[in-house]
Structure formats: structure tokens, C-alpha cells
Image (cartoon, rainbow, N blue to C red; front, side, top):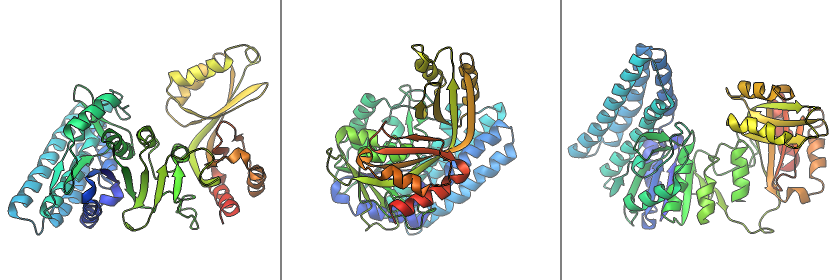
Length: 451
């Protein structure tokens, strides 16, 4: 069996939804399971409803709700234009019910002027509910045998609302119990959402539909997972910035994970883990060019496959923190004390460099950063440099390529490089540069290394 995940831009209107069904049904002999995101613009609108509710602005909340209705109902009517009255009524009844539930939740949130992480998850979960009900209705209208699954019945998480962690064993058990792929039958499920053991709705974080797809794939021992998006695979750089960027036909799990973590938007950073566990290849493909090969992400033995730079990616919104302490630098436990602060505040650290007198590291800008800096100042001197970006070059055996660093520094001549990390991983060379130099840096490096 196979799992096909479609992102928000792939299900953005009725025509695209029919194309999604074309792609999935063309593989009906492979027992397809279709995992869908919310329609484009839906999740952001739901979050704006939350903001309006928090401010007690009922009129704005109603306006956002009407926008969602104006987005989804025309798609419903287009998908059921040639359907039987029974199917059309069934489709409308389902969408009506979801909007009634959403309106009721919205009203309650407006009244209390409060949107907790738990309430936010309940709010944004309607996006995937609406999109998958539309897809299922369209499948019924086309005579495609299909089953609509509520992912909350089988994807089980902890209670870390808005970015929940998977309860793998229970999720895999329930997926095997509730999901039964078969040839000539389409299973449709929501990405991004799950629930706690007690049945409270959670989400896996923005972009979590990719993760949902590989969770289903690993639980069901899929032969492959397909991530369908609006670009033709993983590319050597962001094609919006680099018109000459080209598709990478194959890449290892480790390289794809590095690219995702350091800013590549094609796949979600958590996506790869379940696939690695079961050695399931993941294909990244373009919904608008279904015949194109795309990119194959798979397990690769050391010493095999392409060597050298595969792609350049970047992460914005980075702060560089330098910690100094003459009292503790030569004492045991200084690094432990620093990282304990970030662990306690749940702030991931990206790059680290050390010297005799200081430790420098990079973190993403976050509301938790200010209290973390206060904690650090209790035992050290702290300097911060905001408005930086991380530039990452990813590929196999980078440290073995003797001319790489000279090419990089030559290409970036005149651009200040604040930090460099090569050695922590043999597949990633990362640099920290001022944010205003990021785009120029990417363009220069792509010309030097790929063009």
C-alpha cells in the first residue's frame, strides 16, 4: 500500500481537488491512503478567528468565519454539480455541521476572551476536517469507493497542545485497527491533527501533515510515501530566489532531515523519522506536474550515492548569543549550565562554537529568549546579536572535499561571517550571516557550487 499526502496549495479549489483524486485513483491498485492538509488560507484564517476571539471582537471573528464559508461552499457546489441529489445533500450536510460546530466554538471563545493552546488546536482542526470532507464528497460524486477516517481516532499524542508529540505505540496500534487499505478503494484521512488518550484534539505543529503521512505509512508498512506539493521535488535552493535551482533526483534520509531542519519548506522537519524507522522511501512530487519524477528520499549506505553539495537552505530569525565567564570557563559544568538554561526554557540550539574565553551559539527568536538571557546573566556575561540567519550547505562527505571551504569563502568575499560549523556533521556546513546579507549569500553560493 502507499500513502499520498497533499498540501494546502494542492487542494486549493475544486479543480485541484479533482486533480488530487485523479492522482490518487490512478494508483488504486496500490491500496492508496490519502492524507490531506486544510485548503490554502484556511489555517491562517482560523488563527485570525482566535485572535479576534481573544480581543472579544465578535464582528471580526464573524467576518473571518464568513470568509471560510465563501472559500469552501463554492468548492462543494462545484464538486457536486453533477452528483446525485443524495450525494450533494450528504456533502452539504457534512459541511454545514462542521461550520455549526466551528461557529459554536468561536462564540464561546469570544465570550470568555480567551484562546488557550488547547482551544487553538480545537479551532484549527476544522481546516483539515473541511478539506477531507470535500475530498470524500468529490470521491462519492465520481463513483470512487472511499472511506473517510477521523485521524483523531487513531493518531494519539501527548498534551503539548499546538506542537504535540506522538504516542507511537498507541498510534500504530490504532491505525492498524481502524485503517484498512485495499485495492480499488480510497482511504481519506486528515493530516496535522490527532488527540490525547482522553480524546482531546491536538495538532502536530504547522506543517505536521507531512508527519501524519509518514506516521500512517510506518504504521501500515507502506511501500512508499508520496508528499505532493507545489514544487517538483527538493531543489538545490529556493526557486523563488534562485531561478536556476534544479530538482535533486535522490537524497538520503539524513540529508533531507538536515535540509528540513535548517529551513527547507518542502518537507516538515519531523517527517523523516517514521520513514527511517521502517526504511520507507519518501517521494516529493508536484501536483501540477504529476508525471515528473520529483525527489526520492531513501536509505543510503555509507560511501554510496552522490557526494558533495546537494542543496543550499537557510533559516531566518536567528539570534547569536555569546556567553563569557572568567570565573567558570575552566570549571567543570560550565557548558552544562548554559545548555540547562535552554533546556529548561525549551529553546533549541542550532550552532555552537567555543573558545578559551567564550561560548557562542545560535537560537531562533522566541518569546522564551528574554527570560533565558536573564537566567544566563546570573552566572555569566551575555552578549546578543539579533537579526542573523543561518546558511546551510548540505551533502554527503563535505569534510572530505578539500576545496569546499575555499570555494565558500571566496564566493562570500566581503560578506561578514559570524559563525561557521563543519565537523558536527559530515553532511552539513553551516554559516551565520547578518540577515541583510542572506539572499546575496545564497545567490553567490549557488552560482559557485551549482551553476
